Image 1: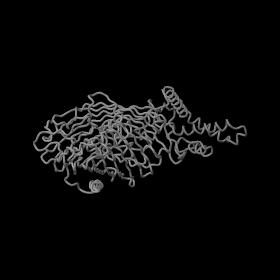
Image 2: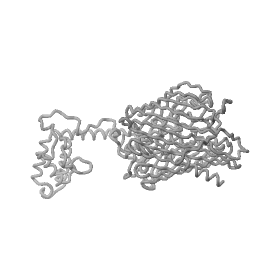
Image 3: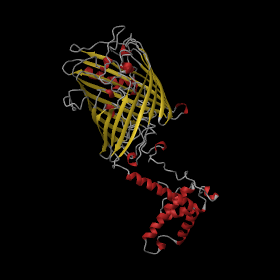
Length: 626
């Protein structure tokens, strides 16, 4: 047992720091023999997009904007995974300090991941709010009305004196007058209006000599300013009245004190396979598929978040993983799902902070996987805008178990350190199986996230679980690896993983991850170990096009590398060829709500058999978000 544990511990270092050996054993198909369908899926657990940098659902209430759980990239969920409370787009690294705790003084690695919305994400109240400085220029009666107010003007200096004397704020949120820059006449009018209100309040509240509160000279200056800027003051007053009326209407029409927003995503894919005969039959027809998801996000307190998601897809069966096509999990696309075009509940979760907002608890009775809580730390974990293959999304260990329901917590220990814990079970709603350490598969995981300087994020992950048949069910690599060599008996699962994202420069990102999983039979000495690793390069905003992304991924799909004492199992030895995954895609940003991504990947020796032909998959993915 000691040797086996050392094998697991040494595996992570081998994946991250050294070139992989030519490991593998699988039985997807042997040379020219009869097809063995080892990719049977009871229900294909497809990862749907995690969070994205642009075009995400936009909140329409200030309350929801302030929620520490409502960040860009947290609204779109998944059928099984990718709920990480962060942006998984390849343009940026995840933010360690912006967990659900949302510490206000945190520093983001991602300019798109900020507490305040970007100009493109301003809160939408349903009606356009005009800008005092630029909109609504009514007919003017004097050329002077078209000029900015300069710091050298009499009016500017007069208002500055009133601000200094009476402490009225001249229109800036930080309380400063900024007397070294010019103002538009509407900005000036807003400041003048503030001083008028302040002096009026002082006059109304005093019963003593007015000289104690406002001098006659000040009142004269104020009157002169009001006369000179009468038109602008009237415009400001009208707009304030209009905004107050709109706000009152919104408040009156609210059904509850909660805030709910609605959004969705539509992914269209034109995809075509090639090769792979064997391991499959090599049918290479092109397919045109869709995946549609609709989601509501509701906050009741301004800090919690309830999300409900429905999804419908039509990528028939197992897609290119069918025996008649390529017959290998490595052919799965990231955005495929088959519900017969019928909407189904794909995700339901509730998250709320505690302990001064430094800990966030997650309750997810539907659509759970470990990465619903544990950060996968992958730049391309976004089915609509990231990797085009299921393997290329993230480390396979986060997909262990094919889970249904789960719970977890995310604890911000310090600005540079987070601890995440997760537990999930398959068929957890079945009283005959049980949720807590039940008869079906259950998995628990823990992860530490480390912020390294201001440009890198690392993770260390440990997982323990139990399976009635020893299967890992990640659906990312060889069938033999996913079945733990077909151990086919009650087994305990151990897995370790590590990952790194490094923003070398704003336009060049590097990422890598690796994982090792060991399966030990409970009542015999049967044992199996599998490994996986990947490295990727990201080139955001390439060719000067903001929002575009070139992604390149190279790695080893999950492969069986060791097994022992299968006398009481149905384990099969498999092949020993090294299987390599190569992937490239280019995401064109058409608008904040539309992107088009042509992509391509190939896998050599699928199933780790020398005689299995290389498989090829190409696709053009179009993603709409609203």
